[in-house]
Image (cartoon, rainbow, N blue to C red):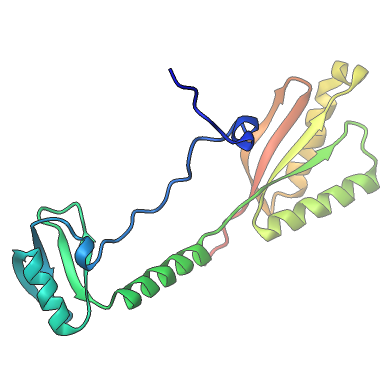
Length: 193
């Protein structure tokens, strides 16, 4: 069996999964290889099913391209249109969709069992800033050494944070113990429209 040759970056990267996947290409004009297609003219009127060569001649008569819109249909749906304009519109739609996507991040604010009042207020202010920005916030507290004997104090600190931010946040994940950590996840409250 022949050994497959790979780039050094592929070997060192555990997430490498072969070539990156490309988007399926839209076939136009002579790249459409099926014998028959369903054709729609530039005025969005159905012209029916015809041979691909006839559809190409018709597109040339209009002076524009024959574009395969739905390749999985039986027979494939093709439209006579300007391909450059079609591609431009598709890119515009993608950008518009990306613009309207809301990306929320998970921020983390760490507390200690014996946190001083000034530090507590500063961390609480940062937490409120993250919430106002629309991010989810993980409130965590780690026990060290003898603090493990008094875990209820850690839960009290987390409960105090939840109580102090109650008008801005709702609890997504209640405080729970995971090993040496107590953590809770807070999300911004939905604003009334």
